[in-house]
Image 1 (cartoon, rainbow, N blue to C red):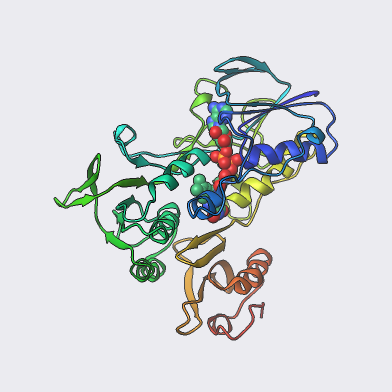
Image 2: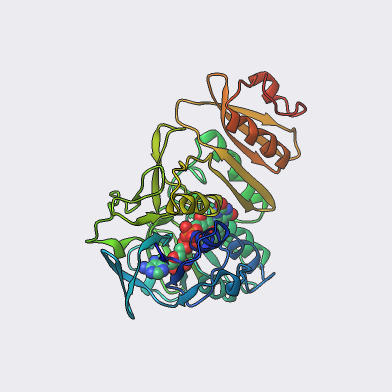
Length: 392
Ligand code: FAD
């Protein structure tokens, strides 16, 4: 093997290139990315860039040391054995790594309406920041991770801000009602209007129409309703994908096509730890998985089976989550009184399987070890925030 092609120049793509060189691969490396930018970090887009704290979130990379041919602003359009088709010709490979991440979902027809924004790229972030001028009415569709972070930035910029959410709590996908209900007051405290159970009928320049007849003034509209894997370019290839478009890999992150691995947001992998197939569209996954992938590419047999972790900054609070909970797990709160800092744990029998920490980073650090170890934890001790988190 002397010619590795990495398609997708985000976090997972860059980390794959870094790991190749760190693990001693001396052959040819090519990194292909659709965006006309060197790889950059996405979490700061909704945090620092929208707040005007920085304009550039590029990763620090020593390209000379990485000895990599970089092809930015060029898009893969198809895959055949040993060849990737792009919008500017073909590229051959011995080994291919798919790291094309996620694309944002849009409301039907919304992309054509002036003043409608999404947030996935640095260009999206710069365009949205320019629209967050004091007094501009901002309507955000979706009270998920992105919706909450954009609302945080919009009110800070002096914009009257409304969040429209079809479900009955924010973040109702990942979290049950008792958790989601605790997020609701954060919006009002920040001065954001939160409309729950509200559905968008249609968007027009300057307004959002809801199905109940309400018309919301909107100088800027932000659609934050989720992502899908950016894998359409693999259609017709031998790479198997799930119904939602995730690349199906085995525990070694190998796809169904010989010589082709995949990593990051776009992947669904089997987890022995959780006894199910999983996709993890979070930063830590894109950081950690490439090292395992590269070890396997170079002849190893490492299984990728992480305990998922992610964080978000919402309305001045650091929200962190580790593990994975299911419907049958018991939810136990760990309240720290009136200071707005709390944690919640999910128990399966006597094991802590997941932890959500709100402005309690120490809980997260201690709880992470317990979740990883799977040792017994006493619920009553857990519920008292004065107790350090440790196994019984
Ligand atoms: P991506 O970052 O999506 O990179 C994939 C790259 O591949 C892109 O540059 C894309 O242009 C390129 N590409 C796609 N198709 C093609 C093609 N056909 N040809 C060539 N190139 C292609 N996670 C957290 O855990 N915490 C956070 O606080 C957090 N905040 C976030 C805030 C924002 C605004 C966003 C957008 C994401 C956030 N995330 C956060 C998620 C995190 O950034 C992603 O999980 C991570 O970026 C995934 O990395 P990736 O390399 O797999 O995919």
